[in-house]
Each structure stands twice: as structure tokens, then as C-alpha cells.
Length: 445
Image (cartoon, rainbow, N blue to C red; front, side):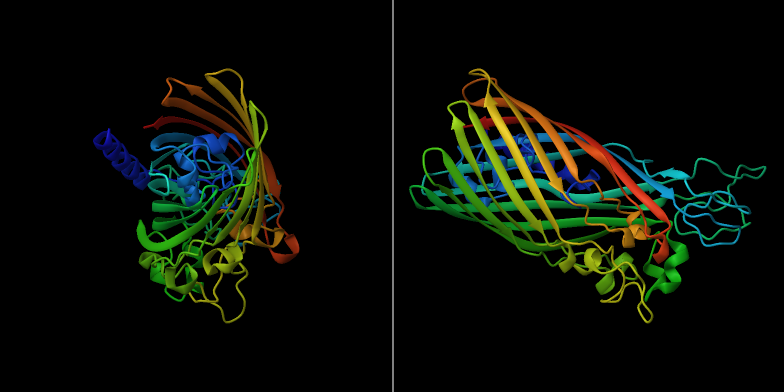
């Protein structure tokens, strides 16, 4: 069994390394980690359900049975940008489609050239009573947008279209239309240790080995404002790594109530060297800190409810939190250069699990976090339209035997739109909705 698990974990890690993690649900983060927690709105920090709980709270390793979980999710976002201004020929436009000519307000463009993504996960725990060890492999966030062309375009006899991708100037020149967008992947591999400090309380630590991969396309018209124009866009894939940590506590308050808290420290990442002229600090995108507190309560012999409150500190990372407005004297790539302009996000996660029969449990959840993108930042928000706020989830757990179970989840993310502030030159309204379906296999030893 150990050999089988190690092979499964390796396959999962390799799959994560090549699969775009296009989350953009709670900002760049998923609603929850592990299929059982996704089905419960993401509530996990005080809700020890299976080994995937250590992805949120390392102290949970002392409160779950020894075993492993593997799973995968198919994630489908729908990303849209809509003009909110009229443009004449020669104006600077995003997604311009009618050179020479005009672009009218109300025209919508889809960023869904890449439309669906497979996101695997795996976790393992060996609980020896007073001391527990584990490891988790999962995608903790990411973003993908891919705008190929507008609904209408002009073409010459060779079917070449005038430039119509993001951040290109309206022009009478012709040539092949390129794709505009970004692709960000973020992978966590987290060895974990947890210790019981008494019969009802434990503390835990995860060392987060983080890998990121990024590429950008179609941003050439903005490169003149960069400190390193040759490392701004269309440089292929660039990798970065970093090491961080998560501390956690979990406590059984009484026979019915369990509480927990975890703090993930900001992870200083290496630089995306191929994009040193795009992100602040010459290409560095750190992983933001996050604080989560929560609880679960067995309100009846068959029913458990859980709730988390999470604070994600996006504003404390330059690449994500710096204002997207290019002030006089600023350049892309400088420490104080433009970022995406995101605000910190407070997320509320609520879930319920009801044991319908000895084998079947049903789950449901709700997750809400205000959009971290405001009306003053929709210009670059086109590339990262993480504006969704409300998520509804359903799921099940079906016991195959005393030691194994299947877990399934479905999450629908309701459409939300942030309108650009025209007075500040934010010429796009951006919106998104999402659907995700996941399945997992749980095994105890």
C-alpha cells in the first residue's frame, strides 16, 4: 500500500505541474482544499474530515485517522470583458476589432480560449497518537485568461486580421492575430507534523514547498512603460520557487464542538526572470499570507455544521496589491511599479454534512468573499477577472467499505460583474462565473 501511495502521490504532483490551475474563486485561491471541504463551502480549519484537512490546518493530522486521499476536479470558468466606452479609429483600445473604424460600448469579448482545467490533489497522514506526520500536494491558486479575438474582425485576402488582441493599438497594419492573456500555476507540496499537547488539543506545522509558473502574451503595447521592455511579454513559460510555512492549532472543546486556527505566512518567491519587466520587484510574485479561524459542531448524531472565516492579505504583496494605476515616474518591474490593485479579502465559509444512511452522507455549503478588484482596477482586471463573490456547493460521501469511501463535490459560482470607472480610464466591465465538479477516493489504514 505504501508503494502504491507513493506512486499515486508522484503522479498527482506531476499532473499538477502541467495542469493550469485557473481558480480565481476567492481571489487567486480555491474555495476550499479537498473534495469533502469543497462540498462544505470550504470550511475546514476546525472540521477534521479526512487527510485533506491538513491542507488548511496542519494540526488536523492529530485528529484524523491514518490514511490517504486522492482526488481531481474539472474546473470551468467563463471570463468576459465588455467595452464601456466608444472609440474612434486611432484611439488606444483593448481587444480592438475594427481597424480603421470605431469600437462601440457594449461589445463583449470572451477570455475562454482555454475553457476547462483538470486539478488533482493528494494527501497522506500517519497518526501515531501523540505525534502525526503527513504530506499534501495540491494547487493552491492560479489564473488563466486567453482572449483570442473579438466577435467581429477585419481580414485581408490572406485571412490575416489586423491586431485585435489585448493591449494592442488600433492600426491599419495587418498580420496574424495573437492570443492575449496570462497563465499562472501555483503548486504546494507540504510535509506536515502535528503533536498532541494534551488529549484534546494539538499544534501543527507544514513546510510549504511552492512552485509557480507564469507566462504572458499579447501585452506588447505596454512594454514601453517597463524598466525592462524585453522581459515584459511573450517570453514563454517562466518558473519560480519558494519555501514558506503554515502553523495550526486544533482543539476539541467538548464532545460536540471542535475549533481550529491556522496562519499561512507570506511566502517569498523567486523571480519570474523572463518577466522581470512586468511584475514589481523585477518579476517577483509572492504568495500572500492568510489567517483562518473556524469550528465544527455536531448538532445531532447525524448532522455536523462547520464555519470558517478567512482573511487573505493580497494587498501586502507588491505584484497583486500595488495599484494598477501607472503614476508619473513609475515603471513596470520597479518595486513601486503597477500591480493588479487587489484589496485584502475576507471570506466566509459555511457547510453542513448529514449522514443520510450508514453508507451515504450528503453535504452542502456556501462561500462568500467580496471581489478584491474594484472599479478603479478593471483595466488590468481583464487579465485576472477574479470578481466572483458567491459560491454554492453540494456533495456526497459514499462508504465503499469500513476503510474506504468515494467523495464527490459540485460548486457553482454565480456570475458577478465589476464595472470599470470610466472617469479613471477603466474602459472595461469584467465578469465571471464558474462551475466545478470533483471526485475523490478516501482510504484509512
